[in-house]
Amino acid sequence: MDLITIDFETYYDKDYSLRKITTEEYIRDDRFEVIGLAVKVNNDITEWASGSHEEIYEYLHTFDWANSMVVGHNNLFDGAILGWHFDIHPKLFGCTLCIARALHGVEVGGSLAAVAKRYSVGAKGTEVLDAIGKRREDFSAQELDAYSDYCINDVDLCYELFKLMGKSFPKKEIHLIDRTLRMFIEPILELDKELLADHLVDVKRRKQSLLDATGVDKKDLMSNPKFAALLEAEGVDVPMKESLTTGKQTYAFAKTDAGFKALGQHENLHVQALVAARLGTKSTLEETRTQRFIDIAGRGALPVPIRYYAAHTGRWGGDDKINMQNLPSRGVDGKKLKKSITAPEGYMLVDCDSSQIEARVLAWLANQQDLVDAFDKGEDVYKHMASDIYGVAVEDVTKEQRFVGKTAILGAGYGMGAQRFKEQLKAQSGVVISLDESRRIINVYRDKNWKITHFWRACQNMLVEMSRNSRGSFGFLNTVKFTTTGLDGRVHLPNGLYMRYDNLDYEQGERGPEFNYMTRKGRNRIYGGKVTENICQALARIIIGEQLLLISKKYKVTMTVHDSIVCAVPKKEVKQGQAYIEQCMRYVPTWCKGMPLDCESGFDKTYGGCE
DNA sequence: ATGCATCGCGCG
DNA sequence: AAAGCGCGCGATGCAT
Image (cartoon, rainbow, N blue to C red; front, side, top):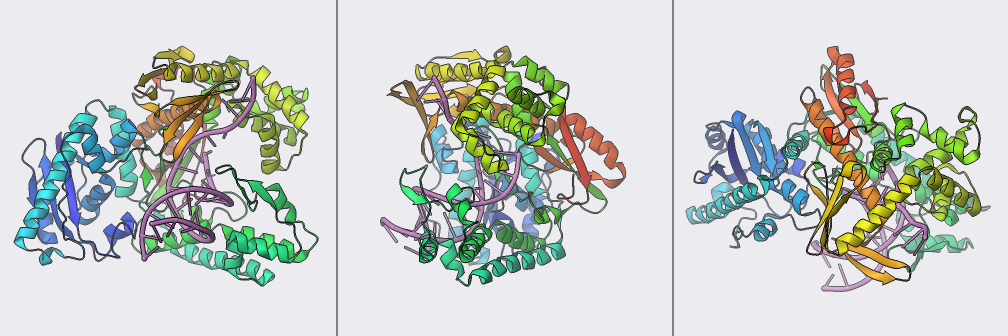
């Protein structure tokens, strides 16, 4: 297999640029034009090519793409140009930006310049290229020459970086990068234009009627101080709270803030209307995302931009202004956007969810064997938890009691305290318990799952060890190893990558060291329970990654949302396809024998219809 | 005009 | 001793 490194230079101007519009819109726009590109086959001399679309097309088709791996820095961009404009479909896509993010942390600068500097492979060109607003034909021969040097240099840097970073990079992760990029580069999902148009009208109408009921202007609702003034005018004591970020007093206007919620039942009906309008108009997601979908529908199929290694736990994230991982799905009529996403002609979509994967990983990792066994047998672990909490037989557990058990299983496993548990329970289900009762429930959880509480302590000890610049391993079958490089703590993961706690430091608190590490947004507190959560999330991501690759052998994976995978399956074999996909999602990787995995799936013509 | 911090909110 | 966690996007308010 050949390695082809590429970089496209394309037309841009003040408005038509990647700073202003999405990658999808930019590449599909009528103004799109290739100024030129640099191509390097294996270690051959890098070539520069510039010419008309037809000339570039012809030139590009002289390479053997079908047997090549194509690498670029941010290959989402170059790969999409190859596919959408030049009908070129390589065997494998690589991306030095993706690899850099996985190796050196999601926090560090991922620009080609920054990564090149880190590896000392040379500097990115600094010459000021007068390219803005210039079409290919506007460049003089000398200007084009300078541009070619610049572009060739970029490709050479990218090639060197791939050699250095790619050598030790896990093969499976390379394939995951490839599959992730293809969700965007090879779009097959379609959008239901009529449904979207109707939905946009509905959403706007709904918001307007909320506003009409108050008789105030939208901007007075959206602004915190102005909204506070409206409430004060009604004689309301404006609810305040302490900011979790700054510690200062701030307005408590979030939909889960108790004081604000109470205003929703205020005796003054105008106050009720104001609160309802504020809540109903504050989130613009439904409206903006619907508009983006409508715009995309006018241009073609739906490319799914998923960012490889977005979280320091390795999870994927959204990208390109249209986060496909947080599409609404709860509440009445909540799935309209998902329902607008449709399988291509002759296909159905299968949406398969891994069941409670993080809770299962936690039980396995901490070697909480009774919980592992319960998961394995397919028992209702939430009911079992509730049975212990309330001292009733499993079959007598009420719906409300089961919900308490569920909240405990999903939250208390990472050290949640009584105060937080009480609030969470109230916010999520309206169940109100006393602080003493909350404390009792937390204690029941911790006693029952004592191995898990031990694991928090092991993770805390790991932080201590890392801060002493040492190495070691812990966890079930020594799955989790850690080392320290300088001040950077690293938790090694079974896929060959690691989670980093950069510049790990601590302050001596009254009751022991309080650890923190550096992120892009400043220092983050870190402690045993949180490390436990991070590791479980990372391991769950590795498991679903392996499963995604298995599924890809047979079906096109169109997107993933953390614990779910959405595939397109030919209509006539949808039942067999669904069975195959479920089989893949129950696959237990070799490094985690005994992991109790399960899944559930549904299929439909639309994403939102998969139940 | 543009960038940054903060908050809220959607998902897992 | 105890502390649930992980994202991205959009709006506002304020600084440049």
